[in-house]
Length: 434
Image 1 (cartoon, rainbow, N blue to C red):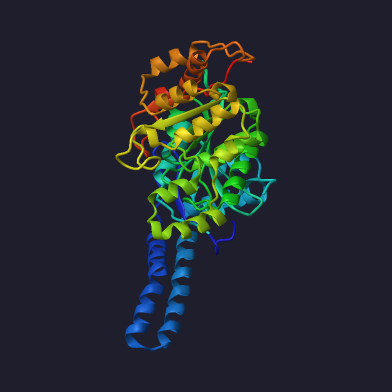
Image 2 (image 1 turned 180 degrees about the vertical axis):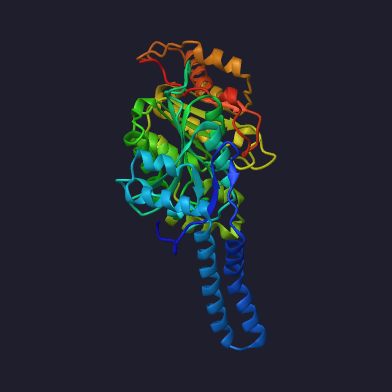
């Protein structure tokens, strides 16, 4: 059996009953004493003002730790798990990893599935049950990848390539979540519901992924996940969609700009530049601190990355988004407007070379354009002709064409920042036919 002294917490073993692991009485006693010995000892030391209590606390801590070890060793279920974990560490292959994936346990002890060739924690919500439900319902595969910086990234992969009659399963959606969504219950739910293969991950510092969400860590994690999809799951670049929500839009845009052959980029509830969002909500007297902090550690400039991308794009604008626009302000101030404007000006500069086009586009952008899923599909499927040269086009014709292109790129829907993207709006990114 593996090393019984340094052992992970076992949460559950997946089966038809999705059984929660419960330690025996000895292990529970050891856990209770182990968790409470230090705080109780420190309290007694302060109350009695006697340093000998520190020695008593250390002795109690070690004794309860030994009791927990004995309890786990006496439990046949835990011994079986440790044997499986030991085999996976000693001989990592498909058979041992499949056997290990029957268990949910402390991520820190999970064998490494992939080392990123490129270049600590915030909080840990109790997502074991949500993760277990996904693994049981969709046969999802949990893996650990290591970035070049040494961050351990927790991933979930949903393989739908072998689903019969699936039109979307052969396309992989890499989901880059935001600050309030996770691989276990995030915005990936929409891609899963639409039948796509999905690779989700918890960003550095979130749930059980290690590290801190600085700019370089975010980029390294995203590139490691992308490499993992290509190397381990054998997806071609032209079969990969990248979906980024909120702050995850930065890493998503980075991937798209560096891997131009991807199938498309989807930005949902995403800002143009983190600094601009922070300044609009920070008190004026903190503006200098905000500029310095973001400039040094969180310089997430989505526009700069988007300027390097020339492929299919879909931008989602949430009409009640209280983060991308201050509460009470209309869609005219939504940060998605900047993304769309920058993208279209880069791709079609000659359509903006006159006042009629510029004003018509600005007026269109300042209005809500909420449509049903069916109406959006009709717009998406309706062909438009984009000429190679614009010399013979009037200003009015240019403005009409510009708005038609905008309609195919931007999707409005009534939701606030944290709502799930409705299933019917998860439409493929658009680009003009070559």
